[in-house]
Figure (tube, rainbow, N blue to C red):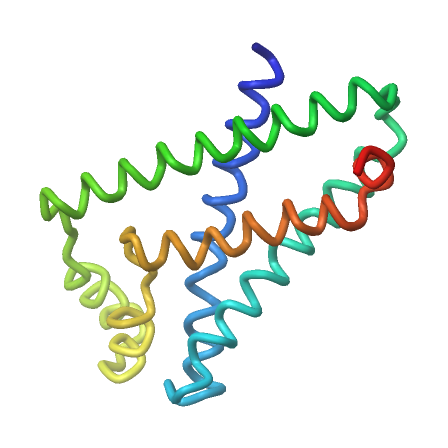
Length: 165
């Protein structure tokens, strides 16, 4: 039960972190590419590198504390990926239900807040409309690239998992 809860928390952490970091990624990539054809591939590349960096940070922190036998690692690894996949599917279903019921929020209050603080309509428009990652299936799939990158990096570089494959 503890492992299941920790895997669910791990997935939620990856998605919440991915969603928070998607806002600055959208703004930086928008300024770099001027929203041309390279906009989406660059966003996907940055989100994938985000998954790699999160794995690197957590792997280096937890490396000395883990000691498992080879057989236990194989079953635990497969169960962990299964739990994570089910959690991602549940999140996707919740987002699809949210979209099908047309539950959206307005960015106008955020725009007005930025306009008051910055005193400039142009910058308030740049920082609000088109750059705020709203919760929809498209942005969910973009953030899922970070989750996938995290797991692929773990599969490729974690020595415990390499031994069982």
